[in-house]
Length: 247
Ligand code: NAP
Image 1 (cartoon, rainbow, N blue to C red):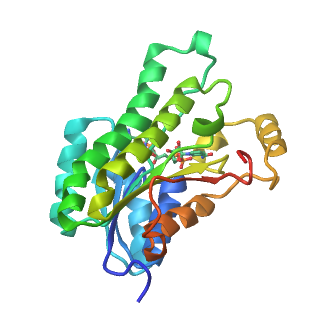
Image 2 (image 1 turned 90 degrees about the vertical axis):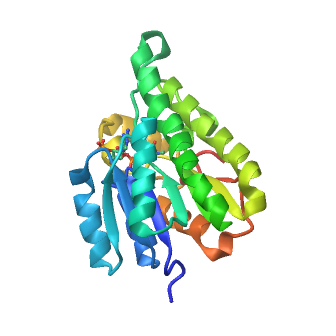
């Protein structure tokens, strides 16, 4: 028996990057995975890889910033999988720019997906967690929500918001045996950071005591910990996975 045998995990933004690594890590620990991404076809590779690990996998298309889409998807997941034990709010975007030039649309898009998306998916599944008197919620924040970054006022605000949401939600549902924690990744090598120039990456690496970018699997390992039986007495916490950047 693996740590997460007979458990069902929902991972948003599971199509690639950190979300895919989380889906595979939880599947390797025994969980069946509901993969959520903007389009069904984005989930295809992750679904195939999860099935390759011998676990069940389902693909669901949802825009996490759209309440109707999220509610319908959560219903479909509960009907298809029968229950949910673990929710990982991972879907997120960046739209960087200096404050003076940042458009309202870029502010809204980042807040809507990163912060409102986390609220909406949690709200859509929390009733089932409350009923079953168990559940693990893991929100993917960022070190930028802890220490800030020039050119990322929208992103930093959204991730600081995710941290505040995590703590308030943790207090609200703790009495029903549900834990809510956040991970604050530093700079992780994914399609999101592939957009950075080599010069920008070199600049970042200089700020990282462990002197390298992280890998999606580093974040996935921390998610597995929060989802595992060993973390049952931990809630409302933010764990940086950042090579020591924010210490
Ligand atoms: P990524 O490679 O861009 O993957 C993000 C995933 O989320 C994509 O599959 C994307 O789908 C999906 N997504 C975007 N908007 C969505 C929406 N509205 N509804 C549903 N799915 C949506 O990013 P990543 O680097 O893996 O990042 C994953 C999470 O980690 C994000 O929350 C990010 O902020 C956080 N994070 C990343 C880093 C880093 O260095 N990479 C550092 C700190 C925190 P599409 O294919 O359609 O775009």
